[in-house]
Length: 240
Length: 198
Image (cartoon, rainbow over all chains, first blue to last red; front, side, top):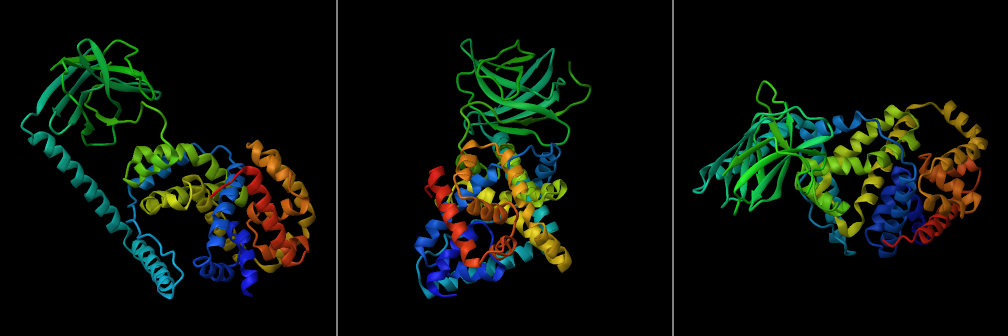
């Protein structure tokens, strides 16, 4: 294929309509051709619109499977920005990066179990560090919030801007409802966080929390997504 | 009414204006699972729909859609907003995975079936028509109808059919150079009609 011809491959490339071999040779060209990069970007966006036009309802149970899988899937580290200049060094780096990326994929394939454990440990460590920072702060306060709806405990540190929330007794709520925590301050309520009772997560919940000036905490049942002001009577309350 | 035993609270997102896809994906890149669930809700129909269009078999499409979202999670920190939108990135990934799947299945089929596929070529007008009636996006539909029949056939066989440009040439019994020109001219026309500026 001659040099003039290769530009015409931008369209089939953006449509994933090249053979593997053609694709490799076009990508080698693409790395150094600004006009083709621009055209591919525009054609890809056009193709994405074509793809979106084929939208149809996804199977409802797919969501839970995807979310369960990402719970045990580690995110990959960011890459350095790809080389843009036309130079042998840049091409070599890009080849080296592809080789490195391929190697990373192979290694990840071989060490899935280790990666899963690592990712869990990382998350647990990060979380426990945050929990300790709240518990160990000089200004930590414990507030019991209770009522006919049950009882929760809020352990808050104003200096850390964080709070732990522990559910002791919780009401059963509908799927399209949430529990909303409010900070009551001079007779007005500020939203402080949304919760759902769950049986699966055995950790306490950590949240950003600004307790300054607060007099009381309260919990209401609100529609999914929460409300900006309480729309029902509190089912639990507690003075600070 | 309180339940009998202690249960655990989990925070859920809410409040405020909806995030842009890019801001949402920024949160995904920081490992935010709620943001990822929101991304899924925004895109699952589009990703699944495209995979189903290319693969036809719903269970294969479902597997591909799952792969695509897990890959989006894994690669989130590598996403570069300078190079295009989240929507384009996700749809490109979805199409790529669907096409890879079609090709690996094709490779395992024998030649007789490929000949049979070619013999069915006259039917593609019918297929194209069904494709169009299902479009949800008027703008895209309009842009497609403004193409010549030959441009539209070539784009649909390549993009929705998962065919390479050589296969499209074979199906349409047209020279490869002609097919390349149709694909390119068709995409340029659609790009301009949709006001795409990358």
